[in-house]
Image 1: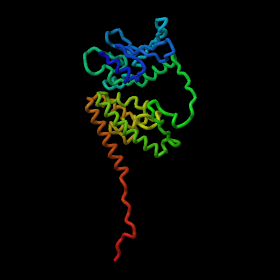
Image 2 (image 1 turned 30 degrees about the horizontal axis):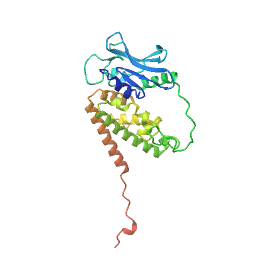
Image 3 (image 1 turned 60 degrees about the vertical axis):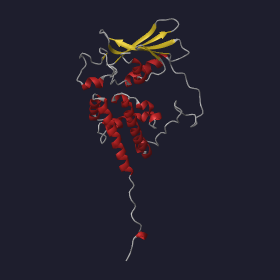
Image 4 (image 1 turned 135 degrees about the vertical axis):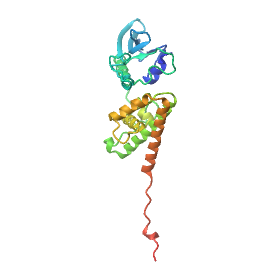
Length: 286
């Protein structure tokens, strides 16, 4: 489809439990419920222009729509980085809009930041499809495993910032994340797309608890734009990341590869053994 809807729903929004038909996503979050979830792009008064997502609850037996909610791109900062980079302000033509006016290979939503949209969709889904309580399980290390079958990532020992072993794991996680981002760019993902969302899979991909994945994302972003010596949360990092995201994918990949080389060089210099001084017994005397 021209909107690349399946890729948007399954990869950008990480909605993998349903089916994409045309430009619309359908799901049955609770198999024992007659309710169905439908998500589609919300059209504006212009043809092939969209300003958000429309979430609807359908009743499979009675028919009809039980509830509808509109999640606008403007309210969820979906295209904030894109619009800020080109100076497009609220009220300007095309602000926070998705347009599919031309035939092209790239998705028209490329560069979208979908973290807030994902959170809103999850909250709305839980409202209509509450999760059933999990049955009690023995609290053993063998039973506490992620969906992928791997044991949970170990927590830091006390406050994470003063745990040297955990800080080393966080450093390694940043290197792994850079490697993953480089591979994603090979598959024609753009930079912010590839970075966004890694924290949701940090335990499985990076070896750290999910709640610390945001730190690896921030460190990786600062390293990519060459500002890793300061705080990764400074406005300078954000501006540089947005500008780099507007450049060709080849330029973005070169920046990520350069960041990987810097991390490798730094790690080697840090771990380089210091030669021990000669022992007194080996010294020659006259």
